[in-house]
Image 1: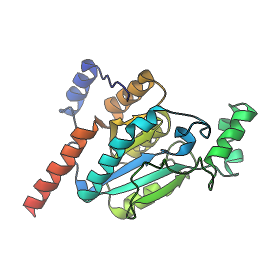
Image 2: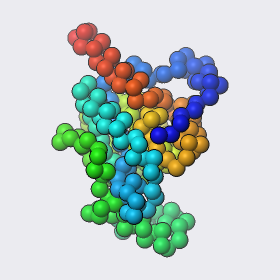
Image 3: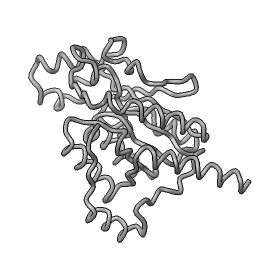
Length: 235
């Protein structure tokens, strides 16, 4: 598990700007969606992964706990799958060109639909009421990447909890776009994983300062459960 370190100076700047350390603490559980980004064999299984992130295995229990809490309090879980198709080779050619041919082939092999790499990690608690979304870019919410935004709008969700791998690539990209599409955006500090602690913390700090909120799993579950009780009492 990553060692999360957000300097007090960063917290102080957030409080000065927002008036609170957690601007989205009052989230509505029934309008909250858990977004689980790319927890697939193609990032987590040795010998299969094209971009192995061993730390991603460590966050699976927290992701499962959050998924359970989101379902129990009326929200929805969305499992995002990084997906390669042949169209990507032309429409996203620059990304592929930055890697040598062997690495390009490995990515295609592990991210193509129907392959072992494309499958979600087996220990994830995927339930029948959850939804699965395929995306073709790092961000699940950039134009043309997936239909996630349409699904969120259709379900009336205004808050997204971002988990998955890698913190500073697909997760951060999705979080930034979510905020700019007017979703309340929360990065889960112990529900994301990447290559190093430094990269992980840099990404969390960038999101926290400008784009949204950062909470750990226990704090977030507490918000979901507490706000559900308050909402039920008011009805």
